[in-house]
Image 1 (tube, rainbow, N blue to C red):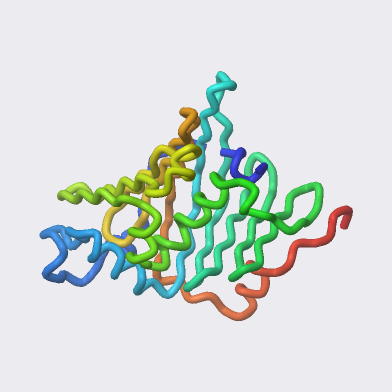
Image 2 (cartoon, helix red, strand yellow):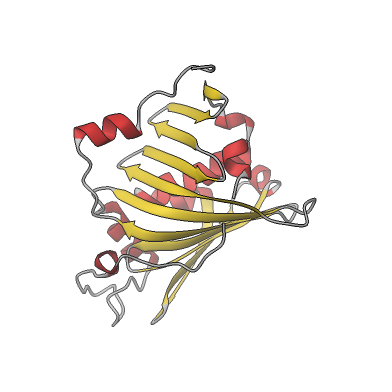
Length: 221
């Protein structure tokens, strides 16, 4: 799918207000999550998420990576929008069961079931930002590590069918802020996404929600 194939590198920068959280017994001395349970509780408490992203996709068949950048929006429990501004404008919208995509060629419905890699790419955001620990453990074998520099969560698919496409997904961040996500396909292709200016306290107005999750225009319009 075009939106998944487009990808930009860069150093992560996190909004300071996102990294701060109230100290709890399950957090380390830096105020970050010391356990997977603490991380997911923090994610579940987010009112909404907005973040800029820069993405790089490395394909075995290409000598140079494919790069992209844009903005990601998440509204609990299952509304996600991925807007790409470079190298060209596109918009992927997941609004409950409705999935649609729009680029310069026009708008269309998207069948994620036809592309397991794209489906998992989207599902990772929904499950993580939604703080659904049960769903996470059902889909993956999680390996969580945390220290003074932040946390890392490696996810290995449990289903043999999915492992035919995806070797692992690794997420890293500090506090509630996701800074990086790397998806490694079984064939060796790799997509790395860096997040900056992350806000997990975002409250969207009705006008903003209408714009972000509006239906794509029909092709040719």
